Image 1: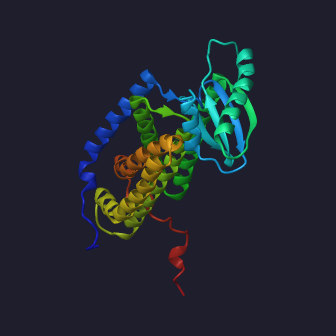
Image 2 (image 1 turned 180 degrees about the horizontal axis):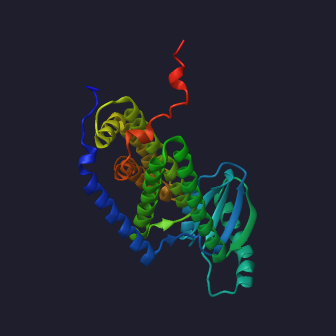
Image 3 (image 1 turned 135 degrees about the vertical axis):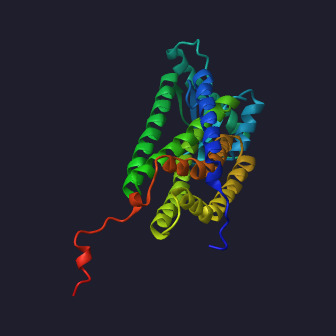
Length: 316
């Protein structure tokens, strides 16, 4: 215990809770007024699928498209390092039937253009018009997926720990997602499928950190004979601090590498995860732990159940 830091995390828990409440309200207001800057993954556009005879460098494809007037095109890997998908905006004033016909022409044009700039052979695998309705369904499906994930997490933590811990974990996860979405809304950064995938990754990362802290809190409640719940939580947070800092730091190193080296197609993913890691680390300390204290967790809540007749086991 001498080597463990003695930071009074819970001494500022009310200030931290107030700050989080303000950030969540600002995020919700921004989402209600500004919504999100949805990318072509969630809006209408032309999806062109291309196959290469050798590995393709997305940065080279982006440069070729930019130089030929397709600055708004989104290029992502599709299945393998030899297949890509190029998404282009379409004119909403054109009838859907004509847009579908134009998608075929656009696909041939893109395939010919990239074929001239590639050392290998480029094959058009397909070209389709994706309507805004499909994008709306993607948003609904992604939102439903996150809600289902939160529900399953709450059940899991209730079984493994205790219901008060489950409430704390879900509140912390909701806090992380809302603030991350709020930052994207306020800064008008593009929200695409990569960003949605990052949000789901944030749930996993934040949950893992919260479970580590919760496990230590439960252990200390059972092991230490003296101390108030607030002191138990503070001790647990200090004991897990080095693990939390090291994990967050190494994760941020990787994400910063993706942000600066990975290219434009992975920037949204990296930015969302960087925001999520920072906020997730904060929420595992000041939100999840704060909630269980507000719910008056006690030593009795976490004690192992005594088996009936166990007091007779030692009698010869």
